[in-house]
Image (cartoon, rainbow, N blue to C red):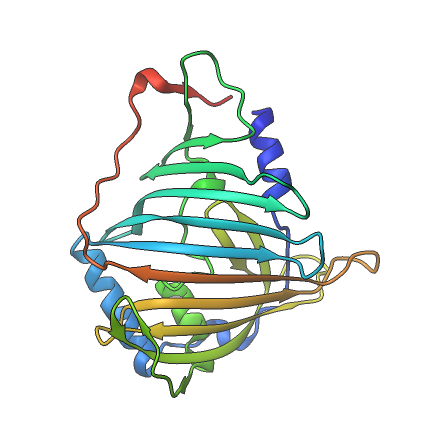
Length: 261
């Protein structure tokens, strides 16, 4: 448990900001088509490969998380299973800290450079641990709820960009949200909490001819809690490829797993 606290203590971003009327916007135009295309992939129990860079801060103390992995979908939940490998670097840290998480339903299996496991064990097992689980309030292009949130601000931008071997169309926008925070599954938003001054998600989304995401960028700027805190910025860049590629995500062998305390 101590290793998890250390991990989340370093990686967690406790951010927050006001929820505008756009939070209740109905998806329209091409973003409605994106939602429909995603739900079609969910219904087929399809999959996608991805890579992602997430940077917090703009100074020499900025942290960087470089990740890659794969998601499998289910009709009701969207992302049902994931296998993600990360490397985390903070400030002038010399060696990135490795981290890997395999999620299957509500079960999470983790490996971390902070772990101290019993001899012969290589994985921690967590059941229903919110920090690791996909949810419906993530700032993520695979989240239909988030796409509904940003639909009202979507503006088409001319582009000839190609990703995943296909020509793409691009939409940009910006939306205010009530509260922003972070856990291992990603950055999430919610209703306004306490006295936070607000924040904004400025985003760009590239779509293939099938209306499925090929690239997603977001700059998340949030105001601090209290005069002694500084505003902060989180930037993420995600590439998606191989829609429908058969992937297998399985739990580690039980002999290598220990129950997390």
